[in-house]
Image (tube, rainbow, N blue to C red):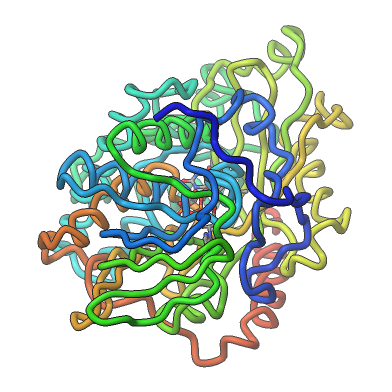
Length: 464
Ligand SMILES: Cc1cc2nc3c(=O)[nH]c(=O)nc-3n(C[C@H](O)[C@H](O)[C@H](O)COP(=O)(O)OP(=O)(O)OC[C@H]3O[C@@H](n4cnc5c(N)ncnc54)[C@H](O)[C@@H]3O)c2cc1C
């Protein structure tokens, strides 16, 4: 099990301009993005190396991020099925080693109030129960795997007085409808007991939230999945999926994998040509992240940074940030629209400007790490864990919209149950139907460009 992984052919450099709407696959055996996480996670555990021959397997999982690895882990642990994971590059090469590590009690981009508006209170409550169970699945894994957890909750900072009013309304619904004990604090309490963020008007605190080192967590998922009997083949992009008999043939450069069932866990890295069921179902959105040098004790004191919990703000184009265990500050937000434009310095400036506005003593601080990645946003802002066609053993879980660190553990677990032929709770809407497509897919980015300008103007408008 712990033998040295076979060396993949021709290691490829990291491609900063990769774009899932343009490129057919995310490459083959590409280096990791230059993240703080990969730089500090240590050597990844062994994997099973590239596919080097034709093979027959029971279940093939495409993609080795949190979702694919969790699916493999729970297929083995809860259903006795030894899955084969196929990954184009390195283990957890996509979002799962690039995110902010914010494990929240959430999935998808909609708030609990928006769930009620879309589905009514009863269905919203069933979704809340599912997301909560998911948070516990994730929390249990963070206890099992050494991933530098920063528990205690999530601080949702109102960047304007007007958004504090929205947080008050949200907290009232959280408590009354869902029995979820969030609470709102004013700016004085925030500055005194949590962090002195310039311009903040107050905050909502929710009790569930764990910051993690995502690469350590993903590597832990890998080791646990293999220990339970899964195989994980890296440097093995699936370039074609075709039906064969009751199952599928998945072509990779090193050999063809025949599978009884296939589960896609390719998230924001899903190529347009991977499978017709997935085409234009995900709108990949770029997000940037940076990590500063270590802050000095004086700097931490000057900002009264008393919390290490995960933090976001109320901008539609939100910032996500936290003080890491080694006293560096991580901050991320939205980025370019296309991969070709990802290296443009204006996108990094969104982060450095945001950092300086929130924490003026840190203006100009040295950045030690900077990277970006593609978030899997669905067209109705919620994920799906489904078998879209009852006639075909094809499954997928994706569309967490920037809230996948915690829920992907449960999504992988639910995906495993589906593959094993078990029913999922009926009322939970993310287990029904399929991800909606988009009638104007090729033009979505024009709309996105316009929306970014509208959101940015609205986010930065001063209070009356
Ligand atoms: C910068 C950034 C910050 C984020 N911050 C947060 C956060 O703080 N909190 C939060 O909850 N969420 C956050 N997210 C989202 C979160 O990271 C994702 O929801 C989560 O990691 C999704 O995991 P996944 O396994 O579904 O997909 P991924 O981790 O993206 O894995 C998909 C994998 O599929 C592989 N693949 C694709 N096509 C093929 C193919 N044809 N053949 C083989 N393999 C293929 C890819 O190489 C990739 O490794 C962030 C995302 C980004 C990019």
